[in-house]
Each structure stands twice: as structure tokens, then as C-alpha cells.
Amino acid sequence: MSDAARAPLTDAIASARGINFELDTEMLIIGAGACGLSAALTSADAGVAALVLERDASPSGSTSLSSGMIPAAGTAAQARAQVHDSPTLMAQDIQAKAKGEAPQQLVAALASASGPCVDWLAETHGIELELVEGFLYPGHSVARMHAPSSRTGLELEAQLLNAFANCEAELVTSAKVTTLFADTEKRVVGAECVRPDGRSERIGCKRLLLACNGFGGNPTMVAAHIPEMADAQYFGHRGNQGDAVRWGAALGGTTGAMGAYQGHGSVATPHQILITWALMMEGGVQINARGERFSNEHDGYSEQAVRVLAQPGRMAWNVFDARLHALGMQFEDYRAACAQGALKTAQTSAELAQLLDVPAQPLEHSINATHGASECQFGRSFVAKPGLEPPYHAIQVTGALFHTQGGLRVDAHARVLSANGTALPNLYAGGGAACGVSGDHVWGYLSGNGLLSAVTLGRLAALHRNASAAGG
Image (tube, rainbow, N blue to C red; front, side, top):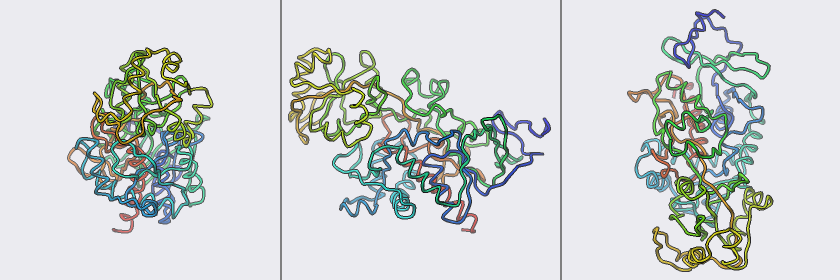
């Protein structure tokens, strides 16, 4: 390859002039998480052999680190459970949490596609997704979370990979994409990836889906766009370096909501295990080292990350009881945390205070407030749920950055948009690569928004490709 042929159009994109591609594919997908695999399965359904490039030897990424819960409206599972939901209600919930900051057309498109997408995964590809009932995450009007029985992203990813193995598509692992090639019109014509032995491979394509990453693992980008989380623990995949944003912007795409992200205020420390927020929604509370509550836990677990990090020692205690412990045991992550010794148990509030090394009187007041207080000083009502009863349990937690929600602006077909609002000719983005529907701030994240954007945008991108190829 000559130096002239490889001369970069920008610092992220190289000229395709003089490049010989070793193979060609109709649709090239970078990333084998929920977004990339949903796109590949959709392509395979239409008889299109997509090629998926995955950086890791074993696909994991943000999907595997999630709780595996996909929000969807109007599903068969909801109908069986007599849950009345609609895309309109779901869109309203998304916008209410984001305070109207989320892109309206994208919200409508994802909400409308969510139910059919989950049903398609279940009915066509055998993905086992249960409707999660018994509690609601903050901001959801009805039960609409669909998840594997373990409530883990690891199981969701494993099921998607199993479905992928049974379709006409190809996955190449240990293939780190380093360069995109474009013509003079900045139309993507291929990519170069590097293999573990240092060998490079060049693959041509007609369309490209960026399903690879956000930028949570890039400290420089986090400091620039999300300064309040610059020193926080990152609970995501270290490969999330913002490559997709850099590539898309270099090709003429625009970014949005770069300050948006999903945080979480309930990561067991030092165990590094996510503790389900269902404990808080069903009656638990968080206290700080002074034994005091410091917020309305029902606002949302994302914004709670910032609040927990603002407490002494940058930590808090989840306080709950035997009823809520039984609820937590439905979650594999919670069981793992208990097995590692994260759970503290006491028969009285005074004993618990001693065990946690916090003042007894404020802790007792925090527990007593759960018994029917119509509205606490933070605006939370305790009327609807039973108050905490002994024996009491507690787990020490911290706040963390999970994944970024800003990225390349996309339309309802997952096409990357230019500054004037027109779609780039053959570039799609989804999942962490795309600007999601969480608005511009941490408090805009509605539980499940990450996987919602991943599975629906992946499928919408492939559906658009199928329709375009068929002249639709």
C-alpha cells in the first residue's frame, strides 16, 4: 500500500484510493453486543450475510455488564400478564424522565419499535425474555422490562450469540478496527482491523453500522464532557474509547447530548457488584456515614450516583429488611454479592448502627421514616410500601459511571445525521455509538434506555438496509 493511498482524509478516516480489500460484504457491523447482533440477525432473516467484527476474543462489552433488561411496549408477554401499555405511554415516560430533552422523533421511533423487536427476538430467534413484574423502576408507568431469568446482561449476550450461531452471518473476534476507508464523498467503503498477531485485514462494505462503543473508558473524553464523573469508578468496558464518535464526526456526522450518561448509585464496594435498585423502589433507603438519608431514592439510580459520590467517603449504605432481601435474591448479581460477604445483618437498629459504624439515633430515625411517612424532607412517600422491620440488612455501595448516552445523532432509521440534518449516505450508528434518548443530563436516564437504543437501533438499521436494497 502506498503512502499516498493510505493518506488520511482526516485523523480518523483514510482515503480508499488504491486500497485492495481482501473481501467484501453487504453490511459491515463493528461490535458484537446487543446492537450489532440484533442488526446481524435482522440481516440474516432477509438473506443478507452481514459480517460482524468484534475487538474482544469473547464478545462482552456494555451488554454483558448490564442487567439485561430491555424496556418494550405492547409485547406478547405484557398481553399475557394483562399489562396495558403502548408506544405512546412509553414515549411519554421517556420524555418525562428526560424533562423533554430527548429527540422527539427518535423517542417515538424507539418506543414504536420496542415491542415488535422484543417479540421478534423471542419468537423468531428463541431469546428467552421474561416480563419483570413485582416492582417498577423509576419513571416507568407499567411493567415493561423484559429480561433473562437471571436478570443479567451476560445471559442476554449468551442467548444472542447462540441465536447468531444458528443464522447465516459471520462473526470475527479479536479484530480491532483501527481505520475506516472512505471515498472523496466521505462514503464509507471499508475498514481495516488488526489481529492479535499484528496482521492487518481490509474488508470492503456497502454499508457500515457502528455498534461498538461509547466513550466511558476514555478518561480524557469523560473529563471534557462529563467532568462530575472524571474521578468516579467506571463500571463499563474499558474498550469504550469513543472510536465510533471520532469516526462518525470525521465523516461529517454530528454529535449530541455528550454530557448525558447512565450512572448508578448502588455498586457494592469493594466487591464491585451491582445491587439492584428494586430494593430502593420497594421500601429500602440509603444512608451516609452520618446515618442520615440524603436524597429521594425514587428519583432514579442514575442521578443517585452523583449524590452518593458527594457523601463522606464517597459511599453510602443500602438499608433494607428480610422482605427486600428475598426480592434481591431473585437477581444473580445480588446473590453473588451476598456470597462474597457484602451483606451485613443485625437484629436491631442500634446493633446495625454499631455494625456499620454510624451514629445510632440518625439511623433509627431513617428507618422509622419508612413507616408510613406521607412525604419526607426529600419528597419521597413511604405510604405505598411496608416499613422496614427487623432483622435489618445493609450493603455498602458507591456511585459509578456505567455508560455514556451521548454520541452520533441518528434518525429513526439509525442513519448518522450531518449538521444540516440530512443522513450520511451509508453510515449507521446504534447503542453506545449513538446519541440516545436520555436528554442531556444524568437525571434523564430512564432505566433500560441503553439496551433500548441498542436492540432497536440495531434492528432499525438493518431493516432500513433491507428496504433500501429492495427499493423500498
